[in-house]
Image (cartoon, rainbow, N blue to C red):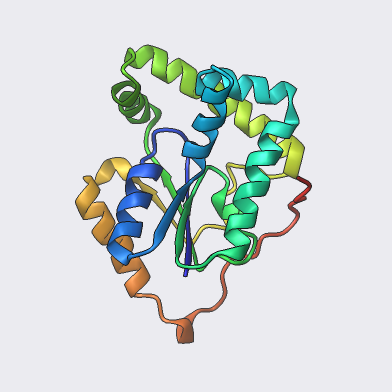
Length: 192
C-alpha cells in the first residue's frame, strides 16, 4: 500500500502522516524533513531555502526526483510532502490533502519553530507563493487543484488521535470491488 499525504505548511502533514504510518505498520518518509536537511546543509532557513530554490531549479528537481522515485518504487509506505500526491503518479492507493486556516497553521509553525505567530504567518504566505510559482513552472502542477485527492480534510477540526481514527476508518472502508476509479494524474511533466 502507498498512501500520500499532502498539504500546505502547518497543515499537520508530518504529525498525521507519522501517526497514520505507525497505526498501519507502514514506513513513513517526509519530504519536509528532506527539504529541511537540504536547507540546513546550506545554513539556510526553510523560507530562505525556498526563495533560493526559485533561483536554482535543481534544488526542487533533486528533491522531487527523489520523492518520485520513492513513490514509484516502494510499497507499504506513507509518503508525505506538498507534492506527494502529484509525484506518486498513479501508484498511490490513497491520496490525502490536509489543510487548516492560515491563522491556525501559523500558530502551529510558530510553536514548532519558536517564533512569533505574525512572523510565521508572513513566512508561510511567502513560502506558499514561492512554491506555487515553482510547481506551475517546473511541472505544470496547479497546487490548488485538489481533484486528484481521494479526501481533503481541515485538520483544525479534530485533535491528532481522533483524526488518525478518521484516516484509518477511511482506509478500512475502502473496497476495491466498488471502486469506480481514482483520479488519474494527467498533464504533469516529470522532468527532473
